[in-house]
Amino acid sequence: MATLPMRFRLLYQMANTKTATVHELIDALNNDYGNEGQYSLKSFNNHLASMRAVGLIEEVEVDMDTQGNLLETFSITDFGRTRLKHLPRAWR
Image 1 (cartoon, one colour):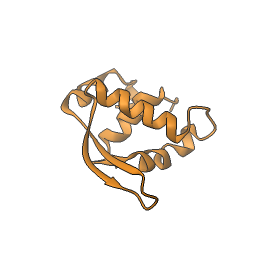
Image 2: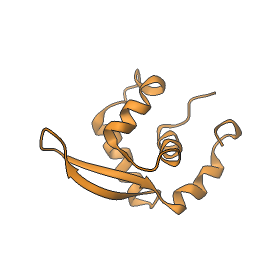
Image 3: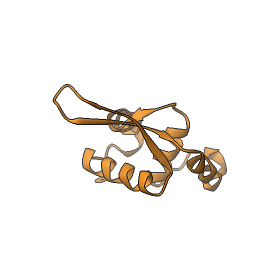
Image 4: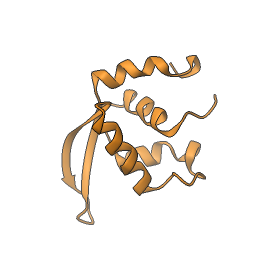
């Protein structure tokens, strides 16, 4: 399958998991995007913030990780699920 744009791939990943943290998403997408410049914690956080701002995903839990950093857990929204119809057929 062809690689999707990062935000669509994140949305696809979120649709196939109940909830996920940024670290879980980074791990899940390592094989497809690990060599790209956008494959960084900062970039993933920016993508997730943008997706949350437009209502594709929502924050369902907030905690602290072992280093004392904020750890948000996200899930896809009903609106986000409706956007999956725009994925190429091979990804549906």
